[in-house]
Structure formats: C-alpha cells, structure tokens
Length: 80
Image (cartoon, rainbow, N blue to C red; front, side, top):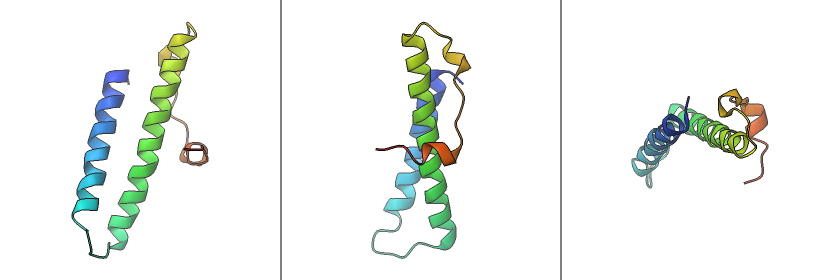
C-alpha cells in the first residue's frame, strides 16, 4: 500500500468513525457499534503507524515498501 492509499484509508475509516459517533449523540451504543468503534480505533492507529514508518524509511534512504503493518498489541501501546 502506498502513501496515497494509506491516507485514503485513513479518510474512509475516519468518516465511518464520525458517522457512528454522530448517529448516537445522546443515545446508547449497541455492543456491535462499540465493537466496531474500538476496531476502527485500532485500524486507524495501524494506518497512521504504517504511514509514519514509510515516511521515516524514505527519509532514511530506505525502501518505504519494506514498512509493515504492526499488530494491534503493538500500536495500542503507543503514547498519543
């Protein structure tokens, strides 16, 4: 996945996250909606991490395509 595709995926995931949030202002979420919201959070963290890895590799003169998506157990422990 190239940078442009990653940015597009971030946009798509963010739009979905916002749709879920807007549709439940003042209304309780279902278990499925909570699960999907949590999943979107992880997917977004993974996309942002992958984009950062690609940029860092490129800046270091390395192949950005060698960057890999890290597991949720890794990206969820990063400091925001």
